[in-house]
Length: 316
Image (cartoon, rainbow, N blue to C red; front, top):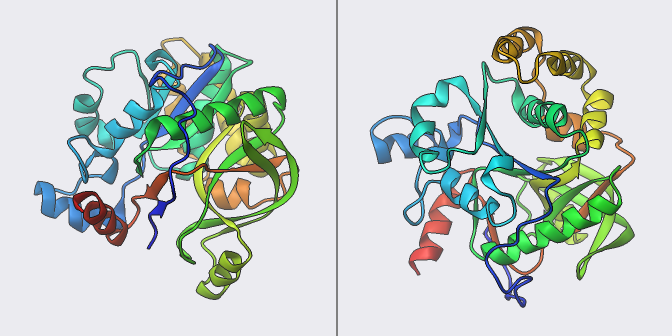
């Protein structure tokens, strides 16, 4: 089973509002097509719908659940939703009551590296000293206050160590080869009550045999939730995907002008496609760390099987 469920710890905050300092921005990744769930969403809605705009549990879509969770820590005016131009017909209803949220519409799909680095460049042009927390829009998380309290602690750690990119790692419940796997190394310090370790190795979707070995070694699943200083994140892009960086870095000239959307379209015409996990996280980044998630219920709703198990668990 791939639903990470552990005994609940004490909440990290007694109030639902964990709002961080004014230097923290959130990036919500909502640009995927959700191809593996296309048959399911077509059955549910009569048309194919990207999974982030589908409601699998409760009354809110995955994107709405993510935004509700993120606003516990970051106010709407510092939240950037990254989507595709082709998703415009779905997005309006999702953001109707959140007019302050920024939307970056990508002209085409250039992979998750562009999905992460485009908003990083956009944010740096407006706030050069920003902290950035990145959240995929396809997660199910039950104990949202506990979870976001831990994110706040990791942000505080990175604020003191701004050159580091810190991933959140989930304790695995089985050797699922469909996740990225993180092997923790040397302990660097603490984020609240949780240890922060340097990443010894990162494996994106390993073979079944490798996943079994990683599971036996006590490695962690990559949630693809991470935090970094905006400058460090852009530096990682420069080092690992230089051709993409070369296209995106030019956008700063047009930031806040009437030509900004045009500049993004031009950048994407020639930008290479790249996967952030394979191109950046699995590279030899010297300052990549992982913080182990606290006791909580987390699942990446990436496959029909995970959706079915999560819905069954909720119904039970």
